[in-house]
Length: 410
RNA sequence: GCGGGUAUCGUCAAGUGGUCAAGACCUCGGAUUGUGGUUCCGAUAUGCAUGGGUUCGAAUCCCAUUACCCGCCCCA
Image (cartoon, rainbow, N blue to C red):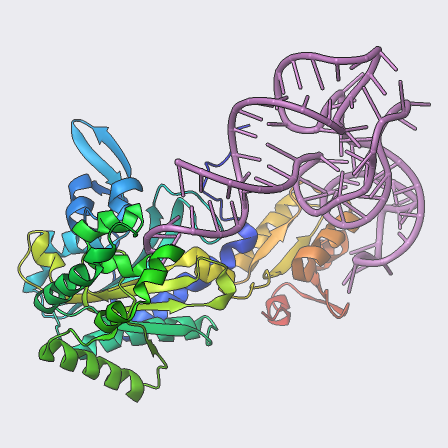
């Protein structure tokens, strides 16, 4: 038997309602804020992700689905910010009135060991806002994330934010960290030594106990907790927080939050839930003011986030399956077919028994699947009527073919 | 890449070396030729992830493989 591949899943009819809910809630919330949906291809040039996501990241280094076709190196998208930025540049969106506000949803691919809340093909929904460097833009996208989650009935979430500063002040921070960690290099794990050269900030994210212990040292804590960011960045960050407070969005400052993608600067944030197991982040994002330029476009500030829809799905309550409005019971297949069509054309969902089974079987099926049974047997056909039976109350009425539709209520 | 766990019908499962592999749900058929969802009867794994081995005898013991789940790493 051929099975679905490791880390992939079928989304079955009985669980599709939640997915439709996640999609329509996104459409509703983002449209109100004038964010437009964009759909970009599922594969892109490998180089887009190498340059966009960053070659110090695990995503690019070991998790990409890359293949060759006609001497081109292509990669299944591991995330969608790079793709959206590519589209923004390619279609000259920088000449549109700014800011340009976009949202997307769709499958992403990362070659990792699957576990709870993590698959190889998974889905993200996200927003990207281009062309505004204002702190109100940061607050707007965080606000949208919160409103979106609220719309799905999620209210008790932990929002963590931090500022990584701009390239200039981050440089200073990076140097300070390298300086203070230098004496401990030997004690740090292999990954940390790799990060030390490539991306020192990520060292603080290390989960290895022996590394964590080193970070607790006083002189290192002083660097971590010290205000390394410049006045401008600090002011930006203050403003973001001011707006969040004004919107009554509760948040926590987490100075060790750095995020795993290279393109972030200034504001970064994550939204977590305790009900997710060890993969507890449902949303992650931040500002990426240099990415558009890195990928060959004009210098354009931007900010955005992405949510993992599988994780989201495990947090929202199951939506019960909808019953059909009507089930037509008849021994005359042609007559049943025509009546079903009449019902459907008048806005009802309707079905009949294709196999023309016995009356009893048909009623049985009707009771299981529909709210009303519409009976059209010989007697009804002769008198040009139908019998409409409410399957919840068992009440039924024989009524003319011109009026029966009024008796069926959705 | 590293570590732990699990594999018996569509689903949930019982079974721990000795005739036919429990049971429940679902599905299908019948009791009931025009009145259901609660009743009763019946059907449904020559098969226990796959391949070897031990044994008179294996779903049960051993070995290998595969798949899935969980954790680390990383991320949404």
